[in-house]
Each structure stands twice: as C-alpha cells, then as structure tokens.
Image 1 (tube, rainbow, N blue to C red):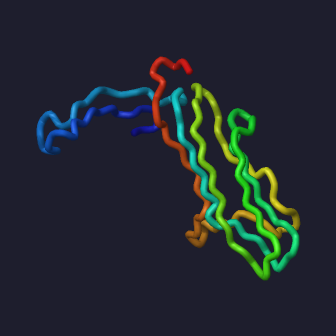
Image 2 (tube, rainbow, N blue to C red):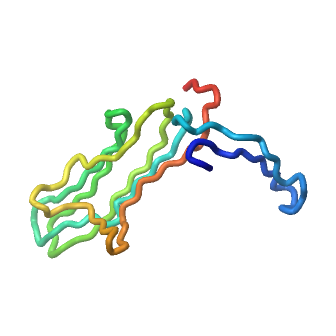
Image 3 (cartoon, rainbow, N blue to C red):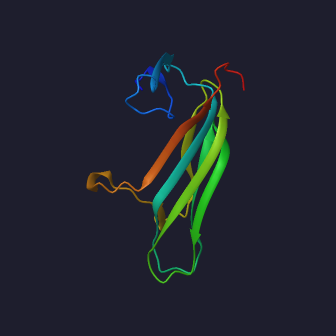
Length: 144
C-alpha cells in the first residue's frame, strides 16, 4: 500500500504458494481521498495514572469524535486509593464512514490538579497509548 494507491491482489489459499495461480494481480485502487466503507477503530490507554492516596473519585474520560460529534466515550475511575494507581482505558467502535469524514480522539475530562492523566513517554520508548483503525469493508459504490 502506497500513500495514494493500494495494489489489489486475489490469493487462492486452496493452492500452494508456489503455484502460478495462487496470486492474481487485480490492479490499483486510488487512495488519495478517504474511502467510504465500514471501519473498526480501537484505542488503548495503556497507562492511566492516578496519584494518591485519595478518598475522592479520580477520572479520565476519552471521546471518539466523528466530524466534531461524539460517537463514543470511555472512562476509567479510581477512588479510595492507598497510593498511586495505574489503570487501563479501552474503546472500540465500528462505524460506517463516507469519503471526507474525520475521526479523532480527544480527552473529554481528567480530574484537575494533575492527579489523573494518560502517561506516555516516547523519548524513553514508553509508548502506552495506541489508536488504530482498519477498513473492514469498502463501499465501492460510495453509497452508505
């Protein structure tokens, strides 16, 4: 897959990989614009930190946005902790998207005062937070 196109192949897995008919080249699909279809998105906040001790409720909330509208929310909370706590936050969503739709995550709420936050430190190769998406089914007609 290149930046603007994807090479499309058909693989017949009933044949041996060295068989001449195992793989058939179908052509290229232009990917210069976003592709309409059904997508799966997943987010993992691998290290949500809550600084304690505390008897109050601490929270981190994340929103999945589609063109500026919330389409998903995930939260993690902790309370009555004896010390610092590390938790995880996950979210998955399957969405039908049109060409030009924009998807992103944003932090909706974190307990103020720096006592609740998502931790990541790419300088120390500590990347705990991941957001990814896959095209499950392309709508070749462009009609959803």
